[in-house]
Image (tube, rainbow, N blue to C red; front, side, top):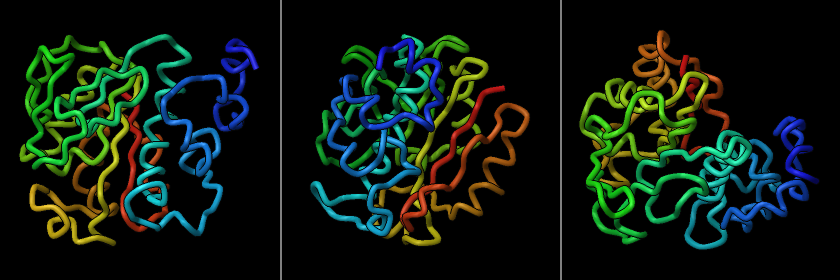
Length: 226
């Protein structure tokens, strides 16, 4: 299928064959999630499996979430996104703001952009207003000490109107978030996050998707900048 045909086809209808010619670096995820769609697992009952290596189905789902948003909001528009804290596993078409290149050291929320700029995910970002069509943060927000609403407002500031902030957060209703990682500064259930955080962003962003992972480990939120 040509790129122009994909542009006219709703992403929810894309198949693995449609994306086969698009180099993302995450093609292995197609074995688990159709067209990188985190809502369409090929083996639904395995979504709760957490382990290292290829069998980490839950981890693949979180990565599929990032890649799916990048395909929709960057690949089809030719724009560049911002990923805050990639853990060295870079989402395609995004600025990689994690300088540790996958090193499993203590997470301190300090990142490098292009190896030239020190960036703190909880402080004002060194970018102009409304310059990114997509901002991603996968298991990052819970590590930041600052007020999460202030952090998300800053991420939304650099997002274009109609652009997306996509986040993944561990779910304290299913996992003892502080116990599994002592660098976690916050612990929310999906219900608490929606009430305490997302509700305070209503004037700035619309919640397009929330808590669809159904994996008893994490929840996601897709915020569309008004």
